[in-house]
Length: 106
Image (cartoon, rainbow, N blue to C red; front, side, top):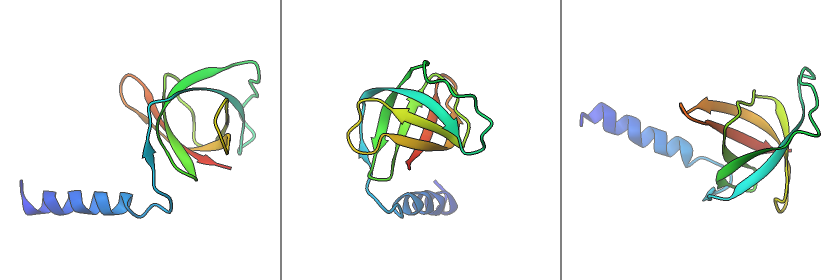
């Protein structure tokens, strides 16, 4: 491996280490519903419930793996989660078979 590739790997890890709160790995399945968006353009779907897998969680948010794509700014209510249970989607990555969602608690 070239030095520049090693340095890039170190930088990536250091950026991840700058989080305010430590994240803990998880594999819990959770149900959630879309309750709106900050842009006001999303239609409310209170009767619709979806599921996903929590892949990591901290005091400020969580990582979620799900079958549906959620746009940044979407407000999500998590069912049966201790503590904060409403969050806003900060980013979405298409993994090819699922979507990895970054959710910040509000």
